Length: 302
Image 1 (tube, rainbow, N blue to C red):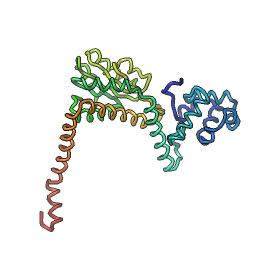
Image 2 (cartoon, rainbow, N blue to C red):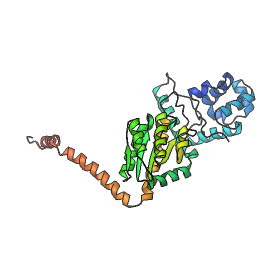
Image 3 (cartoon, rainbow, N blue to C red):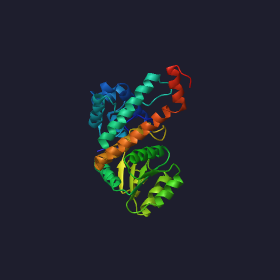
Image 4 (cartoon, helix red, strand yellow):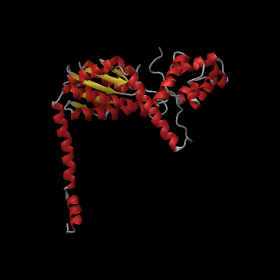
């Protein structure tokens, strides 16, 4: 079986690693997906002007064990409306093409996440968070916004979650954890030095570490529970928007599953949180500006 971390797009990096003959196969597949799904390996080789072994090497380069598996995944993508392979956004693409390509890649990323997500690991992460005395949400770079999103969701559930934007503050906070506490670490690649430092500080302090990043991340070695998030994206070149969306989907899964685990009492907490925000908005509307606005509508002087 191929690695689930194989790139499902013809990203710029993936294309750069293909040999010239394999790139010709890639171009045919990207431009004529529906036709290729019904071709034999000999027909695709002839269409691309390459040998059959070249087609086989291309299939392996994009994560399939062979041509039959490649055609199956291509057909599944066509059936679901989320292409298994698509071309990257080009600098000269028209606006509508850019929009369609982003939709395609995002849908593909979520479909891949659904197929590859280790639900048992996710369930262990929820169980770990449910028992936590204190949760430090950790992230650097793109992961920082994910950690903040997690902290906001957990806070609404009444979970004792905290977030610090500064990497040194994160490490200090993790060093101050203890037994019964959890460091919840978010990343795309999961190899950043500051994240590894914070995770190790948490473990040395006796806390448990839950990590969310790509499979093969160095972070996994420092985690008690690791949830791998697989996406079809070249994060070395482009801002990892698809990866970010996939991780945020996992955050929603964690928070929602935790809410279900905590039971009915948390619903009242959520109701109060929503009401408090609504009351704040209503209070702003009743302020001086709101009063003047209402006075004008009634034809009276403020």
